[in-house]
Image 1 (cartoon, one colour):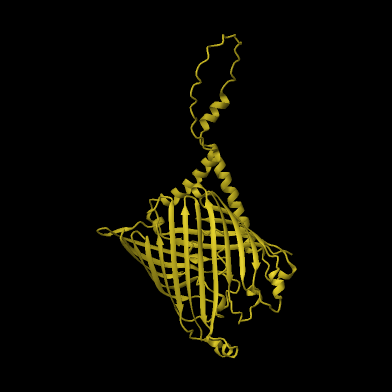
Image 2 (cartoon, helix red, strand yellow):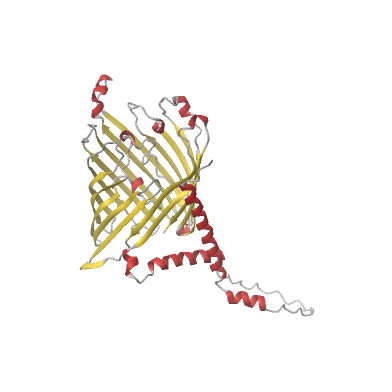
Length: 452
């Protein structure tokens, strides 16, 4: 018997919500001009007059034909009506409660079909999936006048994730003294660590249904393979200059990791960003950033320390965009020092490295978007730790093509196709290297996203 599952339930709910919204759009558009429709139906049929011969006039210059005004389709009218209704409901409230306690909902569900290969039974993914489900509250308060040319802005976000069990997603409060020339911000709580752009990108604004593999790799529970930091508890200070054209952010964070990793001490993270915004042109924008983190020797079983560096850049020209990111992770594998010495290695360092390049185009008002991404990821290029099946694909090269459509602002539909290649697979108990390199595991993903 096929189990229904939580992911399939959310998928059906999402489809039903989508159809209901389309029906609402149609009905709203039909009600835009009921008087004209009634008049058209009540008008009598025109009478036909007898034809009278008319002498042919002298040739004259053709008159100028006036261009008719742009007509907005019923679909566009309904689309804008729904968007405006949602905005007015939240943004136009006079009650102060909405400013301090605004609901937040992010639902990403859909289906994955991965090409079937009899040698890929362990790793194969297929079926309905609940990619993400966040529910909570956030603030939407206007800044308060604090001093001459200074405003005090307070923001918070408290959300939980219900994609696989219940856990905290974001739980932080932020205070900022806003000024064009200099803006300090202090954020405390459970939050994203300022290190890697791929992780800092908003969960609802991803170009593809998932982040690159080096941010969420196969063997995430093994410390050697984990580059990303995900959300962690801590405090960070961000200094913005010239309306945040230049910013520097850093802090101390305590990671929430599986017990197998035994990372029991805090992380020092630092990131700097440059954002030209509208300095060059209203529709030309350059963004660049770099991040670093350091975690010293662990206090429990392992005697390891680690550090990582990340560099990224993006260019937006009207609707087109192109960008990339490179990340390097290094771990001092002190616990295996004797084994390294026996193998005549010059040091005890292991590395993981990944990068991505992407490009695409967002149509006006971002109603449609197309994007393509190339990513390469090697979770452990030393091959000194024998990989398990979930992380056996040692060097990954994935090419993804995606298309997104926003029928209304709060609803997004996405289709991704990914071609996967395993370049430097290492032999495991389940697979030979040759088998891994020849896996047929391309995948197609459909995602329905609801953001409130």
